[in-house]
Length: 381
Image 1 (tube, helix red, strand yellow):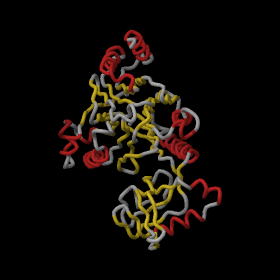
Image 2 (image 1 turned 180 degrees about the vertical axis):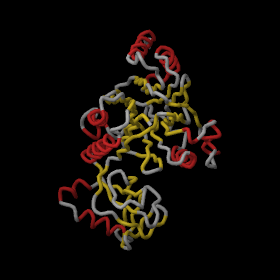
Image 3 (image 1 turned 90 degrees about the vertical axis):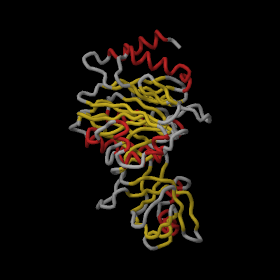
Image 4 (image 1 turned 30 degrees about the vertical axis):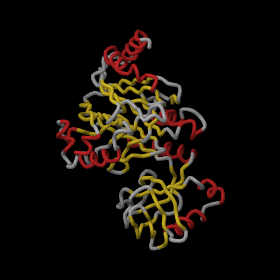
């Protein structure tokens, strides 16, 4: 490792913000840096003068409008966030197991809930139950958005790294509380487009949907697919998912109003559909299709909406978490998601990584996703 070269690079990067203070640094490193991670963090903190530094490992990185897949490297982003109140915290599975009330995490970290506008989180997927953590976090910090992702390493070895300031952890997670004059806004693009109508679930048992609109669920799905044009029917094969409405009180349902989950299978004899979720009777659903074209359309449309909603807000920078099933493998070309973000919102200071699972809000709750692009934006409150 070239320590002098790394130190010079950190100083030059810091020099690009000459009239501003650095508030936050995000660092993402490929597994080849595992043996040198502590040394790297110390050099970056010292020479870029970073008061709070967080991040994780991944074999795919995002820098500016580029996605660097499988080549190895290191990404450092420096953010100047005027008036922000930031705090980095570290948590473990042991704490998740103990988090049994709605004030546990605030007490544990010495936080005033109302002082937090949102969270950025990076988690080791092999030694922390991210779903359980997120359930307790949603309960503790209701309606506060959480963006982030599950770290990646050298597959199939169950080893990742999580970074907070100068420390390296191989388990648990870290989160950055964002408060003060800066808030977190963003986009959660689940890569799907709705097909057919929106329906109401009328009989459900655990993850088994028995009746939709008082009819066998499998029959409703079959009719939905059969009513599509022949070319669309071809696209649906192997690419079917289910969208669960997160807010039943909307008059109309649009892109982004559904939590997308796997359609595991169906039985034409019993009429039952098995899904990768626990839906409830009375919930609105709509079937979804996912492929490269719909994933591209989904992200673009959501970015257009975000741009319009943020017209009056100053954007200080962003963090992009891409599923490791996206990228070149899905789109057939590099840098699809990052370049689309820059096209719609740029030029934007942007860093991120390819994740083993992406975290982001749908409605007022935060969820763990797959095949998703989650974009967190630091904006003036």
